[in-house]
Length: 350
Ligand code: NAD
Image 1 (spheres, helix red, strand yellow):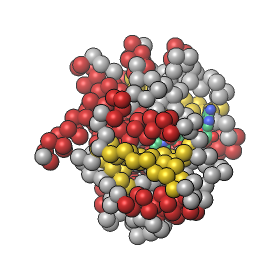
Image 2 (cartoon, protein in one colour):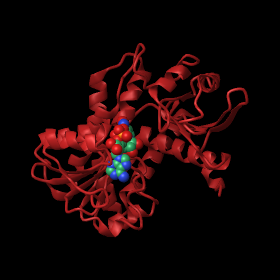
Image 3 (cartoon, protein in one colour):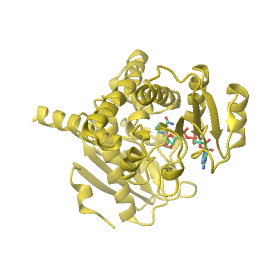
Image 4 (cartoon, rainbow, N blue to C red):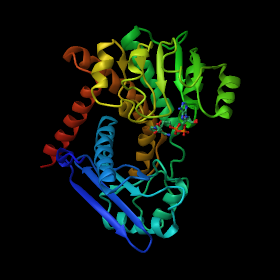
């Protein structure tokens, strides 16, 4: 069902159809008060246009919030292509998308997301310069995962300080769900800092690597969320905090890279009620977008990137402290903080 409130804050929503290539897509520009609307392009087998529209509205707002709290001069936007990413891709489809993004004149900057590869975006980039996150090119920043992992590591430390009063993860047990691109680098940081690692993944090769390199112990897929650990770090799937799992979590902290960790917004309150500290996903996993954002500033500056990624610690500190003072869940505080930053930029502009 479409909720009309979904449109409340969006600046522009566009439906694209190119009959020649079969492209059907939406681009949503949520807010450009802070700068051009940046956010990836997703390809998904949506049931229908309405489902895709709902998704693009939600995801573009999420990007505004994420970019605002990360302190980036970027607004929030997103593109979604309706189609099967295994069977419906073609060069013409990505070229058509590129021309349409170009037509927006830089209001929306795209990048890869679920179902879209860097190679796909390279085709888009032949039609428009408003694409970031590529492997080659003048300002290419490469794989964002190590930066995301470093940001999550800082975020875990901020949560450990707030909840456990400790300055380090040394001796703590951390359950990492998913040891792919981000999970692997996160395990490396945690291992080097002296944490004990429990891991799960559907990919045996990825598991073997972290067992051999970091002495991680494997936990069954359905047990990782309820295992005895100080911290649960979701780095695989969304919606892992849901009605079925929430009562089984033993960790006192949830801090990981996965997007949309809460199945519903009110699970934030439910975690708070259970005395579990939740590091809002889009705040803690912003390292990747920070790295990509560096491309949009002209010269890629690694010092600037590292300082911003390190800032994830203090961004979370602010949210945790305010959550205590206001006695409200961290996910709500994060949304409000993001809205305040955007509102300030908006009114400052007018
Ligand atoms: P990835 O695909 O490289 O890694 C995900 C890992 O999770 C894979 O190894 C996969 O086998 C594993 N997995 C899948 N289903 C699982 C299950 N049921 N239980 C345990 N493991 C399972 O992806 P990634 O780039 O490492 O991203 C991880 C998460 O972080 C995703 O939710 C992604 O959206 C989010 N994220 C990533 C970045 C980034 O820079 N890559 C930035 C922000 C957010």
